Image 1 (cartoon, one colour):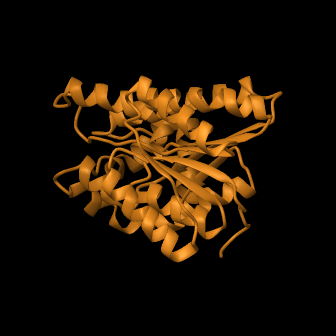
Image 2: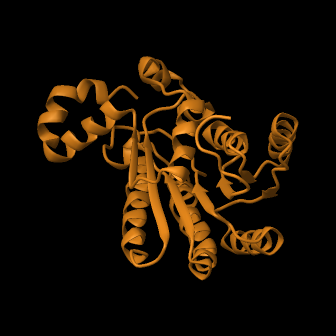
Image 3: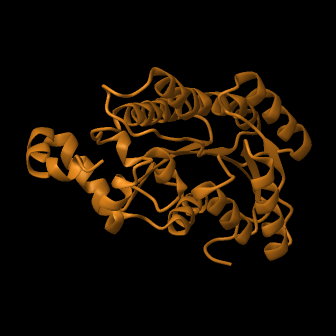
Length: 265
C-alpha cells in the first residue's frame, strides 16, 4: 500500500471507467478505501471492479451514470447513499474535450461539453452536498485543468468549461466555510490517456506536447493523497502551475514570449 490508509472510506468517483478516473479508483482501493465507480460504460466499470477485487479483496460497487442527465444523477446518488451509508469523498472527474477553432467548433459539441464538464459536475455536487452537511463531514474534489487558468487556441470552449468549474468550486468553498466540508481543485496539465486522442482526432496536439505529458497513475496518486492531506489546489506539474500564475499577472508578456508554444494544437 502506498500513502496514508483510507480504511473503509467511501469515495465516489465520476468518469471512473478510464483514464485517471480508473487509476484513482485503483489507488483508493490500494489504500484501503472503497471506491464507488460512476460512468456510462457498465462493461468497463465491471472489469475495473473485478481487477480491484482480485488485487485488494475490496468490493468496488459501480453504477451506470450519465452526469448530463440531472434526474439520473439524483436517482443514482440517492441509491448510493441509501445502500452504502456515509459518503466521505466525491471526486468530480467526469469530463471531455473537443479541440477545435471557434470558427469550426459546433454548437452541439460546445453544449455537450458544458452539460458534462460544468452542469453535470454541479448536479453531482448538489446531489451529495446535503448528505455531507447532515453528516457534518465530507470532501469534494474537482478535477479541473491548467486550462482553467490559461486558455489556448482550439481549446477555447473546453477552457471556458474549466474556468466555470474552477469558479464554481471557489464559490462553493466560501459557502461551506463554516461547515466541516473540504473543497479541493486539481489542475493537471495534459495527461497520457485516451482523453487527448478523443479531443484531437488529428493527433497533432499530443505529438506537440509529448515531452510534457503527465503519467495518469502519478496524477491519480497525488489526487487521492489530497484525501489524507487536503489542499485548496493541486497544480500539476508545479512548473506549469507557476506558469499559469505568471500568465494571470502578465498575460500579454506571456503570449508574446510563449505564444508559438501555446498555439501547438
